[in-house]
Amino acid sequence: MSRLIVISNRVAAPKPEGEGGAQGGLAVALSAALREYRGLWFGWSGNVTDQFTGQINFQRHEGVTSATIDLEPQDIDEYYNGYANRTLWPLFHYRIDLAEYDRSFAGGYERVNERFAETVAPLIEPDDLVWIHDYHLIPLAAQLRERGLPNRMGFFLHIPFPPSRLLVSLPFHEGLVLSMLAYDVIGFQTEEWLESFRHYVERELGGRCDPDGTVHVGDRSVHAAAYPIGIDYQEFSEAANSEGARAAFDRLRASATGRHTIIGVDRLDYSKGLEERFLGYRRFLEEHEECQSKVFLLQIAPPSRGEVDTYEIIRTDLDELSGRINGEFASVDWVPIRYVNQGYGREDLAGFYRASEIALVTPLRDGMNLVAKEYVAAQDPENPGVLILSRFAGAALQLKDALLVNPYSKEEISDAIHRALQMPLEERVRRWQAMHECVRDQDVVWWRRSFVEALQGNAADGN
Ligand code: ADQ
Image (cartoon, rainbow, N blue to C red; front, side, top):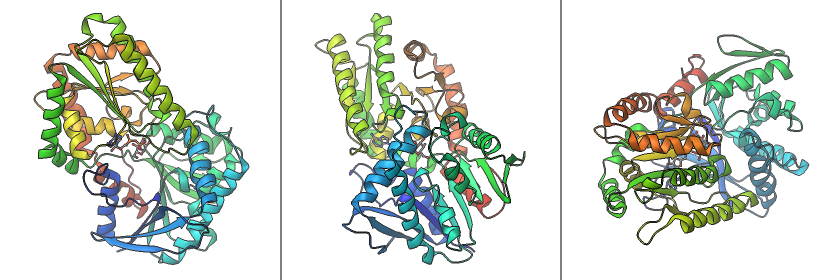
């Protein structure tokens, strides 16, 4: 059996419970795949060294071998904080207003991809399957091919793929997309992002897309399909039934003192639509005075990517906005928004989700969004809560029984909260059952099996 080589920007190091959470679902799923297929997980260690040496640090943990390298400060500035997070991340989330095009960023991105290729290539054996993840490493397969690697290589994009009309604003966009043709399989979260890719290939590269998912450009053929990622349903259900989850549930319910909890859990990122969510909730409080003091919004949002200025700005804006709304509406015994800037472990989160009657998951644009699926998985089947979900999250294509909203519209958010509060038990159960079936059956194990099968040459896609 071929080995599997997983390559991603960061390699998930196992974290002890309580320290910002255990491994995420993706890490668990990929680790399981790596145990099944042997192989290794390669990426950046997260450490910085004065000068790049290419020295590899091997570690073995619970049957999974990881191989990591350190990067130098210029790499972090130009590749990670630069091209990946200031150019591609905003552009791929349709925010060309925030995308920065700096030649040094593009140069750093190429350089680090070359460094990855140079260091990982000697570790790859001829019949290994290579699975590369996300926007940090789009040109990596092309770099590996230049070094003569004949292996089957696959790429999975965790974030949206932008429409051609936006993508063409990226200098040298053609080069970036052409480099994707070095893969054998390209996976997107949804049909919508797949469609954008196919449109770009036909329109900008003069390529051809077959109905079976094969994309042809010149003499290259690639299988491109949608493989919607899921949560680790089994692991999450176990977390939801744990003592820790029960304690978190009791703690939140006790502090709610009979009020309804609306929960939001997000990384602090502009793509998550937090400001718009707060404003939608504010509109709800204004329009439904009778509901004031009967609900509160618990927003959990630990900071991310502190080095990029935009994140500093969001943090300041949200602090100010939540303070303003609380100042405007709070009474001696009620605060409308509890805004918590810290991460929680899976058990705590599961307990909080279950104790919340409503979840507000309203990203402006999101590849998939696993919080929506976790909320569904954590509910009490006899008395489930209501998921309010942005129609611009990849998850909306699967979770059609959520209350779907336009996250830019304060009115739609306000109406959805009101409707959720009034929703009869029978309707809540019906909607939840349909979503639960999807979250349970199309979980992360199903996702990685579908992808790895395609990578092995069986072109089954995720749908
Ligand atoms: P993210 O943008 O990070 O992922 P998401 O899918 O919501 O977004 O996953 C976040 C994960 O982090 C969830 O498992 C969630 O529980 C956890 N998390 C978030 N806030 C937390 C907090 N305060 N405390 C503890 N845990 C927290 C990217 C893409 C998504 C895509 C995923 C997977 O942007 O669209 O779904 O990759 O492909």
